[in-house]
Structure formats: C-alpha cells, structure tokens
Length: 374
Image 1 (cartoon, rainbow, N blue to C red):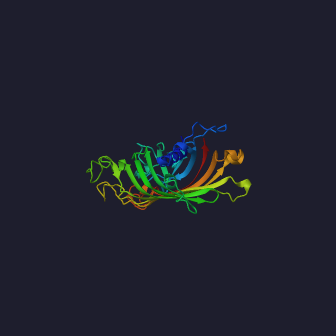
Image 2: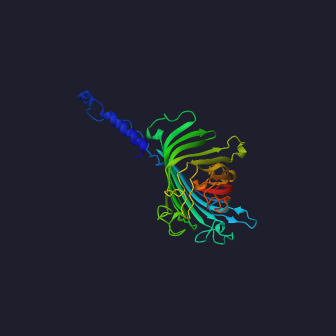
Image 3: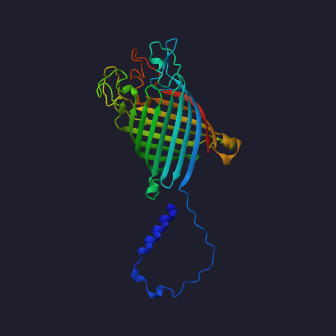
C-alpha cells in the first residue's frame, strides 16, 4: 500500500471515529443491504517506492590532475606537479516520497608522476630522476541524501517564487590510495539544502553544512622519520583527527532551451564546494617536531564550475533516448587540495629545502568524458 493511499485511509478512519455515537439511531440502520448499481471498479495501483532511478557509468580523462606531494624535477630544474588521470565512475540517483539519494564511486588511475607504493616519489629524491613505477590508484566514494520539508510536513509552505523546497541533508565520503604514504580518509556532513528552480527545467541547490573529516596517513606515523615520540613528534597509529568545521556545497543544471529546436542537445551543469580550515594538518600534533613539518590547514575550494554536455543519444537516435549517452567537456579547479596550504606545507606543497612550490596542491585542468545511462 503506497504512502498516499495509507495517509488517505488513516484520515478517513480518523474522521469516522470522531463521529458522536449518540447520533446513531435505529432509523440510521437499513433493514437490508441497499441494492447498488453494478459498475466495474478500477483497481488501485500502488505508486512505486522510487519515483526516479538513474544509474550511469562514466569514463573521463584528466590531463593535468594533481596529488599533493607527488611531483618530479625536470632536467631544466622546473617542477612538474601534475599527473594525467583516467577516471572510471559509477553514479546512482533516486527520488522517493520524502527526498532524494545520490551515490557515486570513482577510480582515479594516475600516470607515473604519481607512483603507486612502495615506490618513493622521485621528486623528493636528491637525483630528481623521473619515477618508473606504475601510477597510483585512488578510489573515492560519496553519498548525499535529502529529506524535503514539504514532504515531511505535508505542506507547500517551503515553496515560494524560485524556491522549490528546503531539505535536511546528510552525507559521507571515503577515499583511499595505494601511494607510498597510503592515505585513507572519511568525511561526514549534515545540514540544510535550499533548492531553487532555474529556467528550462533547471535547478540550483545550495547547502550550508557541518563538516568533519578523519584521515590516516603514513607521513605522521611513528617510524617513518625514525622512532619519534608518540603524541609529540609522531602519531602511533597515523590517524589524524581534524577539528569540525563548516562547508557549503552547491550544484546546478540547466538545458540550453533557448537554442533553436534543431540544436537543443546541449546542457550546462556544475558544482562548487567550500570546506573550512580544520586545524593543524597533522592534528593532534601541533607545531614543528623532529623530522616533522606542520602547517595550519586552509579553506579548501573544490569546483567544477562549468560542464558542457552534448546529448548524443537524443541527437542521433531521438528524444525518446535523451541522455542515454552524453559526451561532455568540463573545467575543474581545486585550491588547497585536501585543505593543505598550497603556499606552505613544507615537504608536500612546497619543497622543504628551497620553499619552491611543488605545484601539486592546486589542481586546474580541462577534462572530458562520456557517460552512459542504463
């Protein structure tokens, strides 16, 4: 039994139980069942639990990705902090009676400038020789769920003008990589999302959130730079514990419906995310210890401000197959990657001996891909 039918049935039953019993009399009870006209009764079909289910796979190529601390010194003395990456992704989106769910998981396969462990990053060796190891593999997954206030409270009070709805939002993310430092992280978010309508069936969502991140990394573990003093110059387990902070995530989508009808195969979309500073990058360690560098984190800005999508299946097969196959090109910008200070963080974002930038803590790249719906 679907939610709307249950709600209606409960309401009718509630009204029936409120009818005063003393108003009933013998005259109200028929002597025999009334004869009703015969008529076929249409069956009542349940509304599906999920109104929308959308699954997609994507391959994309990123020519100038980065991984903080992965770089190589070129023969002319310049520093190359970029690494080409192939990205394989799966995403799922669904909408149900109370809100939406989004899940995505991606595998990033780097080239040799971001080597897999146990290969030591060539850029930090005195020789500056290029790495010859296989590129690293990085897996990142995230989930976001919303619970609409209009749906939860059975009202339209949270729809006004361009405002479509207000929702509670919760989410999480996890990442792991097989580089020499073996980083692994978990993040959790909770807050409110404001959903606005855009022309041509578009939307823009803005979500202020509370944000907490936990990281494990061998860079902080006792033993990498000698025995160390647990809790003073190193961490016994390598688990970094950041302070809670704030975040703002936005995303948008809009068809380019103003184009001539024979060109309405294009759409634009994008996302922007700000994540506040969360204490020392090696917390709970603070300051500089023996063999250890430590720097305050900075506000992180992770964005794909523009993606231009061509609906290839609609263009070549017809509107019935809209967005079954998309080809797209986008621009990605990630400043202070993972919250690391791109202008400091010795040994990662800057060369410890000279202070020169490793060019690995800010990512700026155009990339392209193809997405298939199934």
